[in-house]
Amino acid sequence: MKINKYLIVTSLAGAFVLFLNTNSSTVQAATIQIPTQGTSYVRKGNTYKLHLKEAGRVTVNTNAKIRIYNSIDWEAIPYSTDKKNTKEYYLRSGNYKVVAKNPGSRKIRISYTKLTKLRKQLDDYPIYRTTNSYTYSPEISLGQKVKGFSDMFSSYKNSTYHSYTLKVDKSQKLTMGMNSMPVYYNGHRTIITMQSKNGFSYYLPSSMFNGRQDNKKITWYVAKGEYKLNIQTRGLFNFKITGENTDQVPVKNEVTKLTPVKDGLQVDFTKSEGATEYVIYINSGSGYIPAAVPRIKASPQ
Image 1 (spheres, rainbow, N blue to C red):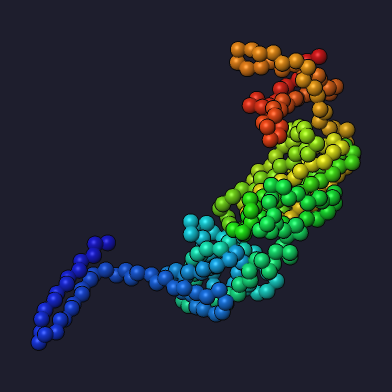
Image 2: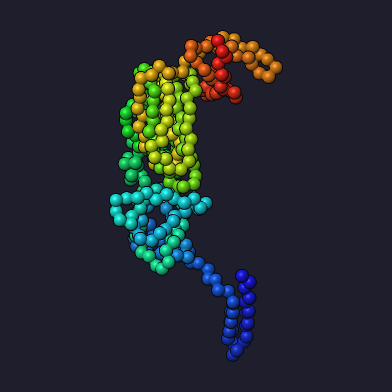
């Protein structure tokens, strides 16, 4: 829409008279700061700023339809509660905008609790400022229900994931039931990996998914040994791993010969009865990782 403005300044008895005329029918929407504790009113068309000095749980009670966005317009996920018209948001420190969708003015009551006060309620094995998540790997057991809360505190050191140690005393089929509840609809995906801690890491499939997942099922076949479970996400999660006996377990084969060839190395290795696929690992200096072409189909015998 074209906007025409006329500015007229005249002098009358030493006074200035200012006239401003415009044919624009639009009005700049207001931006209003709202407190993290207390009652306010929200109206459609306005933008409301919410500032958190520290990561926290924001509880909102209102009959208004609202949306909360971070500074890059990722929408926060509200979690329902057992109280009428009440939802909870888990937010990192920073600035947020609250947008109302209903016409008219609606009352909104907000309360805020620092996540440092809720850490032990939300996470069975919380990572603290002095803890290095690269080495922190508490032991869990089969059948144990575990809850966690990852990548929320700026004070965490290397806190983008949680690690756990799982000891398996015999060959097992492991099934993980995973609930991932991220804090944004957009944002980081959930990545789950399992690897051996016995100095050799044979191939175990990882799992990656976006958004909220309720009871995602992940299965691994493992031999007796000690394993490290990594969960990378941003937000709440909980899981339980169960085991059942199986004879479908990857076997550690041996490399019998390495021969230089034009495009790399020819690898000769021992084979296992019933195996249909093999994986070659290389030592990266910090551990074993799959080679560039890790999977080799077994040739007919």
